[in-house]
Image 1 (spheres, helix red, strand yellow):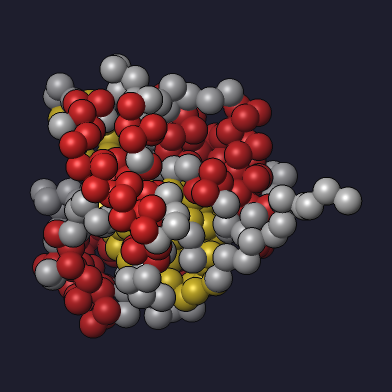
Image 2 (cartoon, one colour):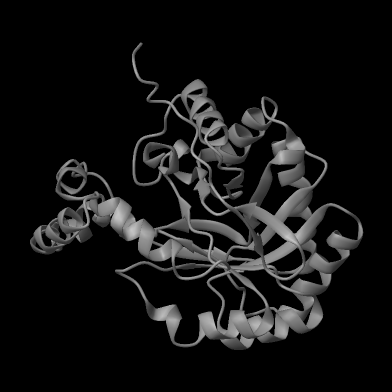
Length: 289
């Protein structure tokens, strides 16, 4: 009888933050399904990828109202959720970025009115009764964080969201926000390539009991190895960055070979071992399972 190569992989479950929010130790970032670094995938393919990740133990899914043209990512995730047991999925989405492009920059809004309107719109697009983890995607420095958090606290009390998160927040903002309502998770870039948060953010999160959700734990594809880097399309926003780093790939590959794993597995193992309060999200998590 042929060996079964599709054996189930047990992904541990951990508490994210100190409010009791339990998630899979590895999360799936749905952003790439509707195109950012790559072309969008067909809807049926995107749904099948989400289902594949879930079938292999990933229950923590991350999206945002800014991902994809016309909020396509939330709509896609919502359709996938209809084919999964909702009570076993931890759904995270975000608000706050009104507009983003490389030429004109980022437009951010953190007013209470905008917070509520975004939450209501996301609930409708996702077609769910509640959002497990609702992040402020970027901090609006023109609005006191206490005002933004005050509205998020109301949404928790109303049962529309369960937990509150911040993305790309400063230490002062995190402290002030947490004083209004406990913050469950901070989402920041963290990898072997980007370690800025280790000096202040990580110690602060552990002091306050806040979980850490690293994005780009594979260095935006850099730690995927030579084959991945060389396959980046010239039109991708990553191509210029990764081209400058190709000379370092050989060193990474040699280290991975020493440990009998791929460069991606090496980088992922490193971030996973930073603590039980660390839950990285991958845009290609299913390919590593």
